Figure (tube, rainbow, N blue to C red):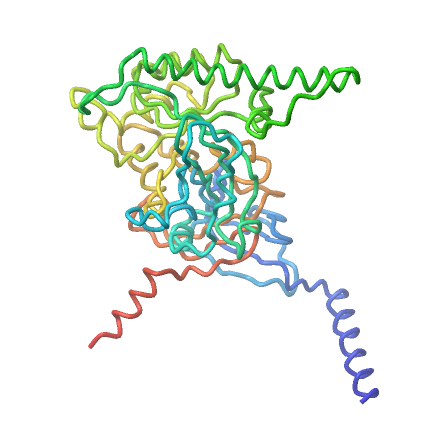
Length: 424
């Protein structure tokens, strides 16, 4: 028995030495021959992407492929960065009509201590559906009340919520008080709206005072520390500008009020929704606040603006230079993220800009463009191989890589397809 063990050990050592000598690396994946759309810089008509240790080790037209690397012949395919959904409920909602499966909406008016990522359900059926359409990363959001909690950035693969989390906090979500849409009955009185804005301001004022007391107590041992307040603790990164607020706002007057609010409170902000942003595009550009567009499948806020106002809105803001990104604003329809960008392109937005709105621009807005959002050496290997334009509904996704690992594209749709193929 001992002799057999030593023989096996010798073979292992020999094989390892052989691999080192001849440069074999079975952990390296080479995507060869694809047209590469890096979204930054020029497209590569036929190139190679090397994946190693979860990152893009090399990319270009003349890339040497190590001996022993797994090679994917991708001639005729197009390589894109994995898409980023900038606002969704993936893992937080399964069936909208079944309350027990909805975990993105919080009770109470002020919940800055809530983390959306802590409620993630990794086995959600919507996650594999979304990633099979080229979405590799998502910002998950909790809503409800005035301050709803912290949105987080997740990768769409993992056995546990901890494995999925990239950044547990990327923004503090605020539902900005505003007048309801004109077609709704019982409009909210203006004085009530002003009262709610004052509530927000007072909460931030209290957080600043709390911070000053803590800071003073640290500098002077004779001063007592304030009593610990969990909600105020989680607002400290907001008032210091380290954590942006994601403000949900749609109507023209509300957008102007929100810009003023951000300026007065000296906050780092991202706007979500902005369906009437085209009416105040100059104000948005001057403010420097980036925007996340909600679902473009929604109805126009006012019919007199035209049926296509919500579709034209992204293109108008983009041409003016407002930083933007797209979102699905959904869980079950997260798979349709690329088609929101496509709809914006069909109604005036430059097509390359639309693609950036689901790749590099959201990465920049949420401060992760050093690790994802484009196909560049050193970034995470979040790569999609498609047989056509990724924003075209007729395109088929052939391969998806997340952190360098090839992802199984099967989901409930493919299972049903195979089942019904066998019908006689």
